[in-house]
View 1 (cartoon, rainbow, N blue to C red):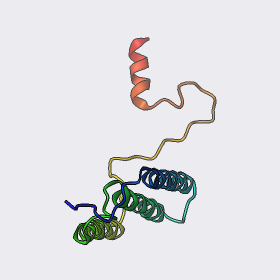
View 2 (cartoon, one colour):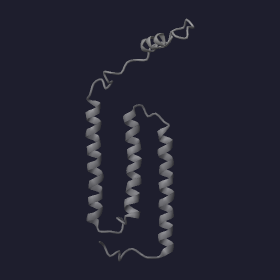
View 3 (spheres, rainbow, N blue to C red):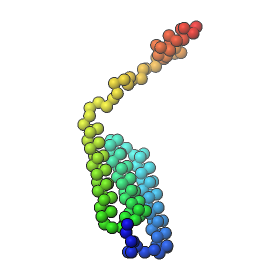
View 4 (cartoon, rainbow, N blue to C red):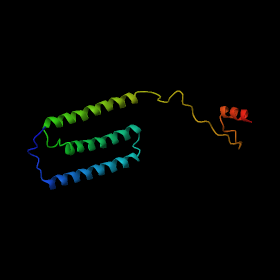
Length: 136
């Protein structure tokens, strides 16, 4: 643990830093929610943008709330290395999913068209028709 000798213990400065951090995190959260309503071309692009914003938020939390900003440099290097490896692992997941062909499950069947004849039983599947015939 560090001694925090360079970190001042002025309550006003610390409170101001926490308020600025709170406002920054709230703004980034609003940007994340706003970005979720925008289609950026592909679902992968939307995920990359959301993860980028989340990385900025995690960095802010690490720097200010975990006091990495005022701690030894080796702790910051370890945190940055963790972010780097997380990004590499996610990149490999995107490469793997992008290299696959059809991701449609084989047991998924397209929905059946509803008959336009107006009969009530026309849209019911065959299994339900047989069950109705046994009840009557």
